[in-house]
Image (cartoon, rainbow, N blue to C red):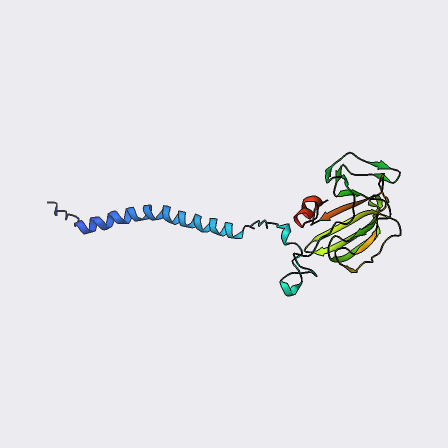
Length: 214
């Protein structure tokens, strides 16, 4: 005769443990995967370069000497003057090409022309250091003054042999740097005044901000 023994029932707490053993891995797996993905995203973001665009406030150019937190020889409120008398004969921006025996101009005027008789004295617009006094081809005889903080004023089409300054010389607002001429691509006597802060900017509003009307 076969020995048949009664089957023991599974106790409730054992049944609970078995259920948890099945359920817990299924719950933990998505959480672990999500946490791993978050870690990868964070690492990717931290490794990616961040582009930072600095706001430029041109009123802060020429921040002054190191003793006042700047990097050049004069203060932010240093005086500015009109380089020459005379009316504006060509504004900043697009304009028709001008051709002379010396060549042709660009379709964009990077400065502003001030009509004055040849021989008229040209003044430095503000304090700075002369970095160039030489011929610039179509721009004629030219002087460049560095005012610090990436700001330059450029004076073109000057009269041949009229330089009153040399490279490296420090000048003040109003220092005579040479005379008006019509060298290079020019159809009459005038000063072509350019202002550069990395790129060329319109001299009229720049100087107006500093109390100088063109």
